[in-house]
Image (cartoon, rainbow, N blue to C red; front, side, top):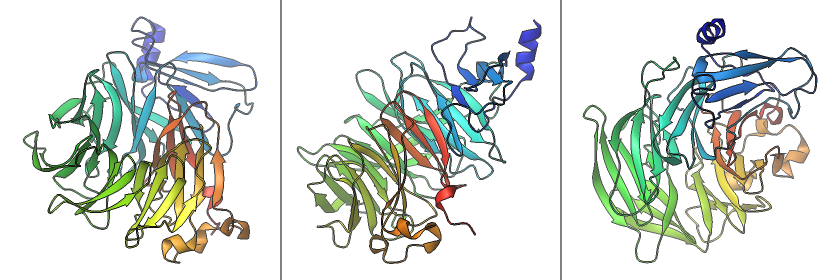
Length: 421
């Protein structure tokens, strides 16, 4: 009974820098109240003791030894979801008070989970703020840019893919965490939905769904908990869409990945305006600091940066990864700073050349002359599986989170690669 009361009292999960935690969905209720989050210190020393804490239904294991944690390099926090696969993570942009990420699992079990994670204000703890059941495998997840409690998921029901808008309840993190509220479904009834794109910034009632065959523009009414297709257009015969990005500089423009090409759409007419051919694209991202600049992750060519005014030839090519380059992300604040991840179990940090940024790349990003020669600033390889999820923090743009298929989430700081002021 005393242990149980201590568990109720320990309301917050915490994770010191150099600590890993497990989001373990395999244990059941009899194992410490529906065990779903275990946090532990992995240390080279001895003297670890175990304490039971209720928060998020979990166990916290703390090391009484002061030995250096095994596998920790620099400012790194990692977590694991053992025996549970995962592939999507998103920055919670609307949370201006915390550095937050939201992630979801991809388990064959009937129930999956969504985890809300926050970094403490001093950057020394990673706090599990909420753990919620999700009915299906989560293939895509995106946080609403104007409400930190709202997010979208694309999920698999086994035979088909659906999508929905969800809301996190106001009270969470208690013994019986409230369920997510499904605000509305985004089922186009046409093809398998691949991703949901929110309006790039600020409050707006428009969002986009991309399925295998169509690009659909939705009108979302949160007060009525409803969404309707405002316009829809097919990608054409023998074209299969797989993802896309919304241009932050022109909200009428969207790029959609389409097997061996990128298609560009004008949302006013829902017509294709341009394309980049012969690009086996896995992922695409717009440069938030420069108009007309877009980056692609490609199977064979690694990373390519394009000036959309001259789309026939890329303005820069980066080697990418030793296997498929799966995801690419521009930093939201530091122009030219790029993240990529791949199926080679590696995250790479790049600095694009000045020519790919109109010659205006910030010298403050470069802390040594050699950085101007070698675009690869650092390679993070402490993973054991393919890395599909990648997200910069919009609140603290020197921090990023990555998610590998085996469920490991790593939070890193790139401050060592920014100049000292």
